[in-house]
Image (cartoon, rainbow, N blue to C red; front, top):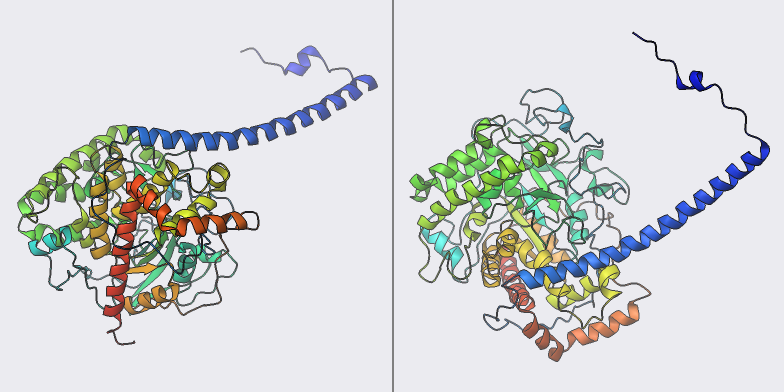
Length: 600
């Protein structure tokens, strides 16, 4: 074997550089540093320009390819659109678009969230926060003996599931009663940006007992103290903030990664177009940092207060498998059509940790995000199509109101499925024109710096769809809408049913204190009067530079002539306004219902 000598020993030691050469080298280093500064500045400018270009291109692509973009208004608005409490787009409490994980690195983009770069779930096989595969899912919140008390949500007349309930949800103007001082979990806050959601998330975090963490953003980091929500004498709930991703098609335009539209919590690539397809084919990766209270894939419960910008119903792909399996068995197999649900039951069973039947006998559900991305083409893609077909065959067999068509014209309405999930959802909505103006000034880089507030076509349609209508419609709606399987009329129908039957508290941004009082009466383990000194940082859309312009735009947006033009030109805005007044109707009904609850 020939011994290899170091290169320096072969060519000899280089001679020392003379002073003139050293001087030239120093000049070169200075020039190189200056060139790097210049190129960095040019790159920053280019990125800002590209962001604007990406936004405009995405809007143009969406509008041009979506065949439902110009559907006529189905029926007249339920009100005049005026709002005496409109603040002209000023939203001091909303934290939409900012990093909410308690640090400053803005890392909630779907990357590894365990504090390292290995995307490996930290070898925590049972995902309970330690390294022991010991199934100790209840160490910090009480024992879970036997079958957990599953919440079968009551319909309006407070009887168990029946075909009559299915028909009530799919048609009519009934509003569901939920009762007082409920103890079911999880409770999920659906955050609509620029509707005061940042303040609400802070208040919900601070509503826990033993809350001791300090700092302006510490509310978003629940691991800093030993807080808990007193769910029951043996169960304690935990707070979880923005730690679960949404599921979207890889061909999405409305939620495209790399554009201003990318989901705040990150994206799971998913082609499924039904809630069950998303649940089975696109499951969230369980990790100790994911969701305190139900991070264990083996758990039968999920004692969590979750807040995030996620789409309504997205919990269907992060709830533990046993939780979902019991829900399906108790709510749908007993519907009288159980024979048709056998395939769905088997698919949900494969979500159990280690079950290799999940991917057609090849592998179990992914345990890391790397596995999930790598296995999408082999597993997630065909599995989504398979479960979609199985579930829709079952859904087609269920009785529907005579006036309801599940497949013709508008698309399936899966609202009854969301209403039956054993969760409590709460939301705050905002008057549409006030919300739209706030959005306009919030996105300064690619909206208010480029357009007049009266130039609403294109960007307004996209913002209304992605951040309001589709967020309240359900986790399946974006994939269906963008692929032409769901019309705007269908989005509106499913969203209206959700507001009437799937949210136990619907609040109005103009009445935040009322919203918190409603939560106190609805949920036994929430106390929004605790830690009132905690405030979220200001996230106003209005500042000194645009204050005068915002006042002018506010006056324009308040005019009925302008509003009628927008309603006519933007069917999505007309639908949003109608749904807002449905939300107001639900809010008033719920306030009256909760006023009869006795104080605890």
